[in-house]
Every structure is written in C-alpha cells, then in structure tokens.
Length: 284
Image 1 (tube, rainbow, N blue to C red):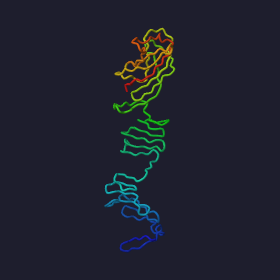
Image 2: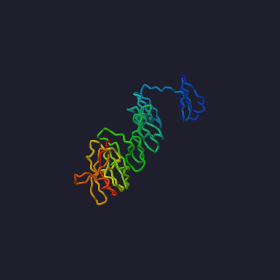
Image 3: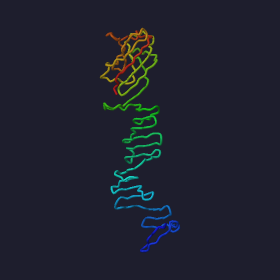
Image 4: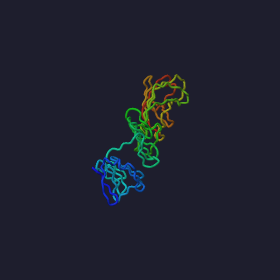
C-alpha cells in the first residue's frame, strides 16, 4: 500500500514502508510542524483545529472516538448533548477531583479505595468508605452505618435527624450536701432530641437531711418539657419504687410513686443503691 500526495499539480505516492525515511525531517506548514511516520503522525504547535460542522477524531479505522459538536459539546464514544458526555466508565486516579468551580468549593473527590468525599461551598458534607457514610466531615471507622459529628450541628427542620450518640455520663450530687456517689454504671443513647439514660449508683453513708437531687445529665433538658418526663427507678435496699422527675436544673429528683409525698432526703438514701432509667427530651 502507498500513500498518495500532491505537490502543485503533480500527484505521486510513497510506500508505507518508506514514510519514515522520506519524511524523517519535519516540515512546517504555517505554525504547525508535521512529522509523518509509518505508524505515527506528529503535529507540533497546533493552536487551532477548525471545522464548519462537528469535529471528530477517529480510531480503529473509521470509528469515531471523540466528537466536538457545533454547540461545543464533547462526546467520548457518544454524540454529545451535554458539555461532556461519555459512553462507558470514567476512571479517576487517586486523590483526584471532579470540580464545579476552579476553587473546588463544589467538588467530588475520590481517594483510591479509601473513600469518596463530597464538598459543598468548600466544606466536606459527605464521606463514604467501607464502613458506611460520614456526615459533616466525619469518618466511619467500624461496622456499617451513619456517623454524625462529635459536636452536634443542630437543624431547625423538624424532619431532619441531626444527631446520634452513645456514651457514659457522671451522676453528681446537686442537693448541696457535696456527696460523692459510687457509680456502678451510667450510660446514655441520644437520637435527635430523645435521650435514653440509665444509671446505677450507691449513696455514701450520710446524715444530710437535704432533699435528694442527682445531676450531671449528659444533655440539657428542654426547658418547656422539664418535669414532664418521669424516669422509672427503685431504691435497691427494700425495693422501694420511686419515679425520677427531670427538673429544669438538669437533675433527677427522686419522688415516691403512687404518692404525693415529697422526695426522700439524702439520709433516707444513705448507703443505698439507686437505679433509674428512661427518656427525656434534650434542648437540641
């Protein structure tokens, strides 16, 4: 097979096997340096490829690989109707971004097999890895689930779940007697504003006649709902049943169940084990 070419009005041809030797020296057409070879043609210094219609680049014979439409849409293996349209998979190498502006304020980042992150207005909002979904820049680290920030970013939307947390808390004496409890267990689970608390403590030996109050709840009580939440509980010695009234001072006030009597004093609970559990509503 030979390659025909025309200079002036004369047309001739050069065998493919002789392209490299006949065109070993680069020729210049305008601002473009042209190097023809048997398998590769090199164009250096090209600043513009123009077409009155769609511009196409082919491969594998006459198969169109890339199309630039008259609307400046680019298609790879496709006839584009959007600014970039790809028929097939798109691979992003480690640490690379899809960006919606030059500053990366709106972006999608992939870090190899570690995670995929979404940025909105420059802040990381979502991270997905092998352990689940992280919200607000958090990184899931075990199991499979949704991870919320350690510090809640409360939402005013009634239909938005903005917090989940599990942990321990420290019951404290708020009766004014400065008592030190022996804590067997004190845990909580918070879902949105709903807080489930559990505690098992021992009162010290005391002669204090102050009304018993137990503070240290893990989250502030919603003031409008305080004293509307009653925790179930009991005094271990004697099995006396008490209700734990959640007060506006973020404390649990033990009060007898089935009775309008006031709550017990510290001396009443001296040396006793006290258990309470139940729900209350936090202020956020």
